[in-house]
Image (cartoon, rainbow, N blue to C red; front, side, top):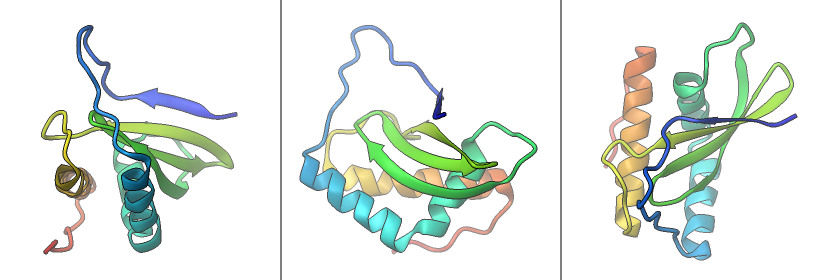
Length: 118
């Protein structure tokens, strides 16, 4: 069974920006191909605390409001939604900035030294 956790709700009247599917595909390919350990760290930092450890995580989507990760804990897949720390975005360059910010907040939350980002 897939569990979903929403970290923040949108207010009525907010308009969410949806990125072109090619942009989403490219970002997800990069995150899951080059940053698998970062996905795991993000899931461990923002998912609800439970007894079983998170054993796998992948970024599965994003829009102008935040990113989405699927993670596995105790053999059960769940969905985690994390809002962009800087608020809503609508431009592709902002995606990288916000994913890096999510990663840095995850490191801070877990007491891990973040890697430098160029």
